[in-house]
Structure formats: structure tokens, C-alpha cells
Length: 364
Image (tube, rainbow, N blue to C red; front, side, top):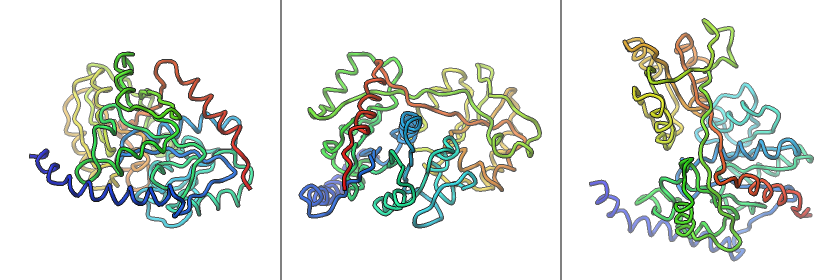
């Protein structure tokens, strides 16, 4: 039934994709202005609507550049209540600035994190107020053609690569798959750690990168679960908790509000089969009522070794006054993730990025 419905939507997908292609042509021919900057601007984005791993890739770039450069991230701040340009502070909430920018500031307090839907205005303000910025990372900006980045990184998910998808509403692409030609680097994300060389060649052949494009493959590495809220409100906790130890005896209440929780589910199932998944839409703003229902479900669970697990982005939306108190005496943990390059190609990726920043022309 769903396939038939999508088939009926294909004409609308073609119409919408054609309008976006016209817009891209106007930028390509210079009829719409696209601005470059003297400070290297690196864009991380995708063709699909979400779930390709932009956040861990942006964090990878922060770790790569911050030892030698002053780094700033600029995001739209999806779902935030504020407007215009806003600096993300340590005490900012996800409601004010969005969950991903808050996560960047939470993990990397030494860098500059800002939100602004108009990327040109945002970059101009960042540079006007800090001329020593060495790198600006644009999160989710592949379709923001008004900025001409020094380097454009396009992500596509292993389980649903862009070449198998269609433009919305018949699919999940934001534009025709031909838009991938604008990228300098293509990365297939969330690959299995055991991806074989044969499958790598098959994916490479299907993606068919241009001669000027570099193609990489990454997986997600999951860290040990961390206690929710312990870093921010230690004095409110009944007791200090250590990282959760999940094994075959564990019973998990998994709370997610992300685009694609399947890789996380697969990871947890390697340790325990006893999982109850409470799934919400991407960037879901949790309410007290929902968390009280989660608390009630936990207290009614008779299984031993029960804990609540969530993602790092979900933790950013829960870890705030009014919500955190509902769960503060329960064993609630979030699982940090990192990007891992396969086939020992991380060093090659790093060299491309650092060389590009080092040799970036100083525009007037």
C-alpha cells in the first residue's frame, strides 16, 4: 500500500525536484549570487531529509581542527524558539538553540557555537566579532547555495544511499541525486564495521564519484552509556552513577527521537534482546507528560537490571529544568557516538582536510 502511495506521488517529486534544479542552475550560472570567504568554510550536509550522521561528522571535524585553529560551528538550530543570530552558551537549552548546537557546546565548550538560519549573515557576524577564527563548520548546509564553501562534504547512509531514493514527497531526497556532483568529498556513513572490500567496490561503482571527488566509508562507534544529567546537576541526584554495564541480563527501555534509530537498536541487540523501544519523530520536543509516562513504565517493569537508554541528541532535549527532575532518581543513560573511518582511510581524509584549510586562498 505504501509503495502504491509513493508511486502516485512521483509526479509531484519530479515537479519539486525540477524546481530545485532550476534554482541550482541559477546559482551555477551566477544569476543568483554565491559568496566565498577568506576564512575556510566547510559544509557538512546530505541529499536526504536526515539521519545520515551529520552531527558525529561535525564533531569529528571539531576534534580534527580545534588543536590548531579557532573553530566555530554554525547551524540553523532546528526547532529552536529563538530567532536571528544566537551564540550557544553552556546554559543554553535545546528549546532555545536546537539539540545539535547545544550538543556541540556541551562537548566542546572551548569552541564558538552559533545558530542563524541565514548562513551569510551568520558567517559575517562570526568573522566581524572574531577575526582569528581559523575554520567555520556549517552543519546541514549542502542546499544553502548562497554560501560557496571552501570544501563541501556530502553524507549518504549505507542502508539507504541517495542513488536508491527519490525526491520528496515520493522519497526522502531534498533534490535530485545529480546534486551530489557539487560535493568535494562523499562519505557513506553508518556502514557495518565488517564492510567487505567487495561491497565497498560495489558501493563505489553505484555512487560513481567524479574525478575531482574523494569517496570514504565510515561506521559508528558507540561509547559506554553515560549517566544523564550527572555533569550538569550533580547535587540533585540521589546518588552518583557509574556508566551502565549492559549484558544479556539487562532489560532496556530505549527512548529515541532521531531520524533512524535502527543502527542503535542493532548495537544494543548485540548485548541484550530485552528491549522496549519508545520511538518519537526526529528532534521531538519531549513533554513532562511523556517523561512521566516513561517513569511509570519503568516503575511497573518487573525485570531486574532495567535501565533507560537514550541517544546523545535526545539527552540534550531531556537535560533541562522541569524534565530532568522527572527522571533524576532513575537509571537513565545516553550513548555517545563517534565516526570511525573504515579501511584505515581516516589519515587520508585528515590530510585532505588539513591541507585544504592550510592552502585556502585569502580572499579580499
